[in-house]
Image 1 (cartoon, rainbow, N blue to C red):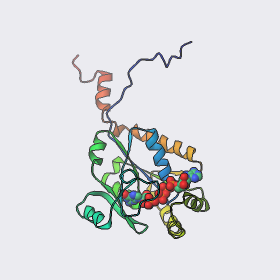
Image 2: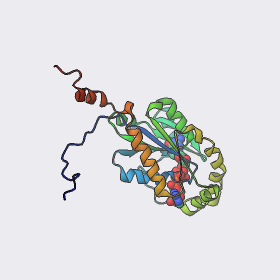
Image 3: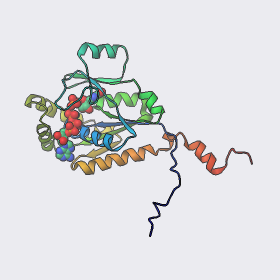
Amino acid sequence: MVDPRLSDTRPVTALARRGLMFILSSPSGAGKTTIARKLLQSDPGVALSVSATTRAIRPGEVDGRDYHFVDKPTFDRMADDHEFLEWAHVFGHSYGTPKAQIWAGLKAGTDFLFDIDWQGTQQLSQRAREDVVPVFILPPSIDELRRRLMARGTDDMKVIEARMDRARAEISHWSDYDYVVVNDDIDRCFEKVRRILDAERMRRERQTGLVNFVRQLTGEGSPT
Ligand SMILES: Nc1ncnc2c1ncn2[C@@H]1O[C@H](COP(=O)(O)OP(=O)(O)OP(=O)(O)O)[C@@H](O)[C@H]1O
Ligand SMILES: Nc1nc2c(ncn2[C@@H]2O[C@H](COP(=O)(O)O)[C@@H](O)[C@H]2O)c(=O)[nH]1
């Protein structure tokens, strides 16, 4: 017998939609970059908002893909020229979200993924609350957080201790977020994050093509 799904040739109905700003925040090492990479690999509708930073490039990172690595005078000039949607000092370095392309991309239906801290989340929420979907990732325990930072092998012990010292302060901002997910098992956590994104895409107010579609469905507004 033929699977009825294979013989279903009806066109897929894609309604026009405004994009959203999908924010992942967490204490350093909880796993948001890992989740972000999985989302970007599996979902062509998501684009990464590539931040500028003054911190040094890590092994495996690519300039322009993971961050725009800039020196402090360049960063300060960009901030003075209002080139950032938000920016903050984190772990002794400056990080900021370049404005370029975000607004036009949202209007065209692109969803942007932001790997930013709580300060950036607050600033974006103040600017465009209706576009922002803030998700906080928690580690299963503080010991596991330290283990992950050490296993990542990208930072020396001094940097790891500084990140651990800040972890409790970062976690204290969990209640600013609409969604909170514990990253115990990476596949389970990723699946939960993916479902949040799918559901938020379906919000009525983001589906700008709905009004016309419903009019067409019901015949409302067409000549009788
Ligand atoms: N569920 C998990 N179980 C075990 N290891 C994990 C899990 N999730 C992520 N990791 C590992 O933990 C380390 C830290 O993850 P990641 O770099 O994604 O954290 P992060 O939150 O983005 O940190 P930062 O804010 O410093 O960029 C990585 O080596 C990653 O492979
Ligand atoms: N407010 C912002 N925070 C940012 C931005 N880009 C990254 N970050 C956050 O910084 C820390 C450290 O990141 P790391 O890559 O050096 O480990 C982490 O919490 C990121 O989410 C940004 O543009 N604005």
